[in-house]
Length: 227
Length: 276
Image 1 (cartoon, each protein chain N blue to C red):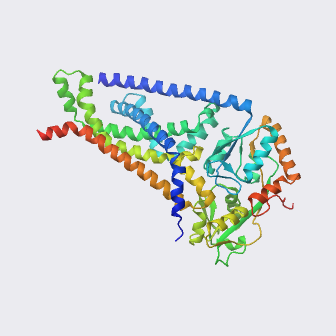
Image 2: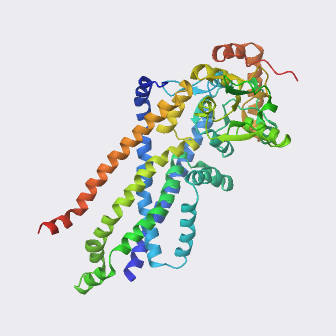
């Protein structure tokens, strides 16, 4: 049995030091992915001419090409074609690449969430003299949010783990730090296991927060049941 | 429907602002990033950080190793501070091309392919390739013996190219298995999933010792000789700097400093030039 448990534990503070950069990249990418994803969903749902066709190509690109290659194209490829882009720093590049890619996925989540709310509800709102904005804000969007939360959280957790790709373009994160450590001691299993456990704990915490959020948006439905 | 159009218009506007502000911020970053570096004279060096004893990081995350000390001495003599960037090896040369780093410290072999694209400094180390095999292995005594065997390589490094080329010229019988990084490769040989792994002799010797795996070197001979230098992007403004840089490396070689550093970091003397 060739496993240095002591060493694995000793890596914890060194690796956890890079948790902020992981959360920073993951969270910022996720938030902008939500914004872009919503925009994409609206454009697709309404089939806005020109934008709609362009967007289909963009989405197909982001869904079809592996994340690592997208980061490469974005960080190395674009500056090669447009030298002015070489000033983009690595963290910005990762955030933009991750958010656009995931926006493409999330747009489908939001689109299906919108479709899941029956059109009749909107028509009913209008029939009781609500304005369109009122209908959207008080009736449609709360339901859309409720439907979109579980799959969106999935993407958040995935994005947190995708940040480990950033080391390819020089962002030292938890995974990178573990690799650098293990390179000196050659204890790769210990180092990778430690990172794995940390990522696992993060995702468990996120799942917990997700369930809290779900409970919050479920509230109106629970009251209904109690009556 | 009208409402939706309005909303989407609004959202588009927001997204435009988003994109524009992102552009603005990167521009200002670029300015603040490049100006002081011109004044303070910073040499931006990229590395995988996972190539001991030449380059690795210590417990505080600082660069250490033979390459590091050589660069620091040269930088000191020329009045440059060294700024390190660690990245996956597969991304390092992309960063060099894109101008995000000035050179690479990763025991970079001066192969013909690389010489065609980059300007190298005077060599600061000399070594060659060897094969890492299981300690019970008695079949592999030369590169010929690799035919029909599974051999691991680090994706995209010069040993990979060397082996691919040899394989092509000799009947394509070696099963070459590229790995993204070196983490698990020695275990692969120890577990018998690979028959051999091709690596630089110095690295292989120290890694076998440190990792405590049932491995050995196939023999004493180098499969191929390599000179190692620091690569720079080919340009006129780099040329002057490179000449000064090379002169300093040569000085360190001549006054025995390189030999001292080699003794400090490496089990094998890496400062003996190959016979031509």
